[in-house]
Every structure is written in C-alpha cells, then in structure tokens.
Amino acid sequence: MGSILQFIEPGHAFDPESIQVLCAAYERAMRELHDNGQPVLVQEIVAKRIIQLAARGERNPEQLSEAALASLGIKRD
Image (cartoon, rainbow, N blue to C red):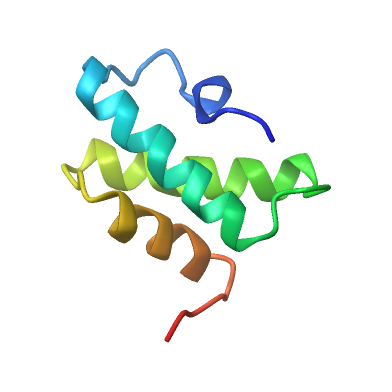
C-alpha cells in the first residue's frame, strides 16, 4: 500500500496533525478497498479527494475516507 504523501502537491501545506489525519483517512479507505493490488489510478483518486476535502478544512478521517470512497461510487451503509 502506498502513502498519501506521494500525492500531496507542492501547493498544499498541512501541519503534522493534519498529515496524520490524511494518512489515517487514506489507510482506512485503502483497507475498505482491500488495499492489495489497487491500481495507482485508484490510489490517486482516493488520495486527491481526501486532500481536496482536507484543504477545505475537513479533519475527520472517517468523513474523509467515506467521501473518497463515494467519489468512486462506493457507498457504505
């Protein structure tokens, strides 16, 4: 499983606490996708959605991962 850090573009600056939230959200989403063998494109879509929402102020890892999965058409009950 990759790290969300590789998908953070230079224009985004997050403090260490936010980075921990981003990593937790990304890892949670990847676990939901059974993280083994996911194409890089899927990893990138998930990561970029999490980063976009975090840049707008969301800091709840569950909300971030749910929104990222929803961007792939995956809804959890």
